Image 1 (cartoon, rainbow, N blue to C red):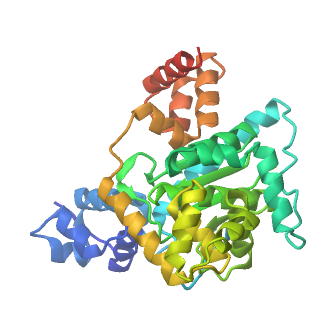
Image 2 (tube, rainbow, N blue to C red):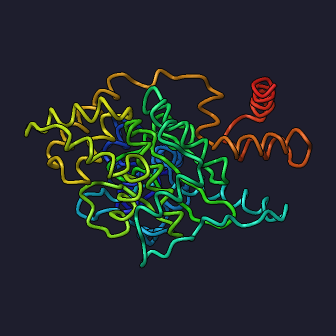
Length: 380
């Protein structure tokens, strides 16, 4: 059997794309030939398997040197000191969302749909946080009463995502790359990203994060759309990026107006922050994490107070797990409810093929019809 001689440097690069090492992939291919594989000595069948495990095109393994590092197609608003380098998981996710957003934009153009007035409606150099927050609320038709009625952060996220989609924004949320449960997205890399567009703005939320964090990330990305900015975010309270700090302030004001928060905070005469915090939490029926975030933004609690609370809540989410859930409900959330319904409707009408619809929605064409039928049942 012929042995190929491939560049160990290329193999190390390929392994790194999968967040692995050449040794780890070599052991998965053959325990007996691990050393030879690490030196670049592989059979054709082993090279094909290496390519699949690394998630890189087979032909790339025959390059002499690694390809030029891919540049980020949108702005990077993350704090450099805190954020992990963007991996292949991010780029594959971005490519998927951009493909869907571009397709949807072209569809809207063909239908002569008018541009969305709120996109790029605010000059980033002249921002009044309260006015922008108020405009976002008015555009979404979002009231304090609605926010207070939500039973948990998941429900509040659903409310906000639904309102955002109603005004023309595609909202995607996923915790893995596509449908691959072995490729979990990292919160250390990014919490979300946004593609600002006059016809088809799109937001992606990293579903690996805590549900309360989904809410803040979603509103944070809405702020970027109002400012006309496309970029990848971590929206960390520690951010030193001016864009992130501004969108953090807008998001916080949308969810919990500063005037109401401070009025409640000051109503407690005790000096103990925990007592003040618990009183505010009893009066404002949103998540504990969002209240802590607002307290931090308004310098009412320390950063250590907030971070300890965040880690505790996120840890509880991991222990609880996702529980799987209904496939078609998850399917619509991953693919944006607006996008899913439009694609399936066009397939049923014969405007596009079921195969094309399946490709757009990352599913078997048979599932497209089932999803459409379920949506018809719900709406009737």
